[in-house]
Length: 302
Image (cartoon, rainbow, N blue to C red; front, side, top):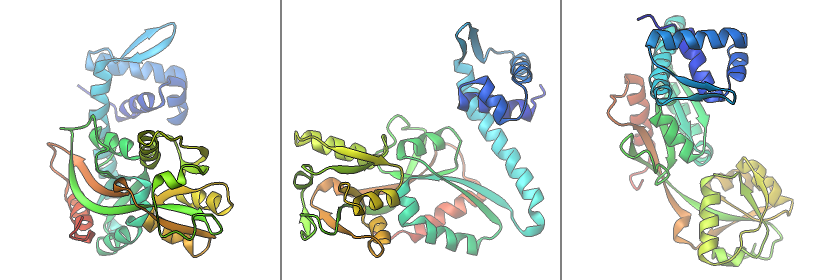
């Protein structure tokens, strides 16, 4: 059996783009050539990967199984290419990391800088994702290491292992002249009458706020939703609402924006962040190096 890496890469693109035309454009080949390669891949594997109809193509169960395997093969091939191309410069391996925005803004800049200074031969590739997507990426071999909010891995039990990493605390961000700005501590019910600047749909903080507001039988008035903590703080500073972000992230912006960070007197405001890796697969040498480094950086309380 001869498997063509170009066809495997095209197959992964089709699965991720959900359309042959978009996958073909991404891989810089003609749609007709892409369809032919997929048919040839099915012939080589002797299995149907897509059901075809007038409404388009739909992946089969075999396609989803192949997706996990293909990503692993392509990652290994990329690793070989990277190590050989960069051997002269001392790069001897790479690690794919996915992490939520809380880890990226609060902890990873310093920790990755120290790791890469100590191990210049290792190439770290970092991508931001929401916690549920982090669990999926690691489980499906799209990443080697993930950092997510503890408890955000439902549906992936048995496919990923969680390791203690860090703790963080959510705080309420208000404009400097806001009625709550002089308070040292607030309950969520004190803030819910205000307009909120929220994170994007699906984010862990939005899910927490929505659930907590429902338990209080009070509405969560999301006036604006953004995709980053800096955008949230800018909107709050402009007086467009209040928001909730981790304390460590808020400290980055307090010196430059007219905002106040107020302690949220809620049990759910204290969160655990966890490292995650795939179950049943030994970590590569460089992945183990990074995992050990990140765990060593964390305080004992995590």
